[in-house]
Length: 199
Picture 1: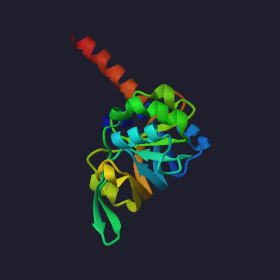
Picture 2: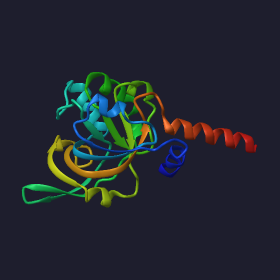
Picture 3: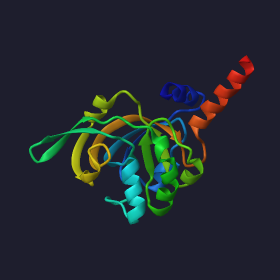
Picture 4: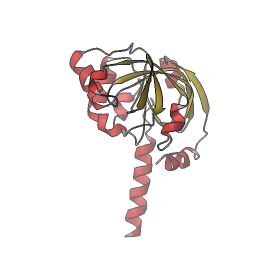
């Protein structure tokens, strides 16, 4: 899918951005679908169970203002009193579709990293962007990560909220921007038209 997104992005002017977390609203409003992003700073992993707990407790285990959430179920190794990321590739984001709208409404999350796209374009409008990470590169991603902390480890290694310091993390493709453009929907629409023309 990322190759398709890159192809779609080439139809427009692609801009490269190096951003520092926490992200501001002007940061994300400056991004357009198809742009490439590299991140420095802190990101937080969260999957299904972490989203569920956040919404139940009405708070996040991190400062949500300008936060970047990474849909990731990492493999971590405990080294002494700290943790080392062994593999930290993106997981499928669509599983979090039903929880993301409420999460964005209640908290100041500015970006979500994952793979496969989401169906939350309206919820992201003027509020958040979706950054598509490259699947299959979990070990490469781990090389750009330092584990700062972990929260809610009782949920299990994959489902816990990991506090990660990242450097030059990317490339990430802006798959859904804060202006209402969703490259995943565009690729799907074009594919359906081509298929229907074949039969």
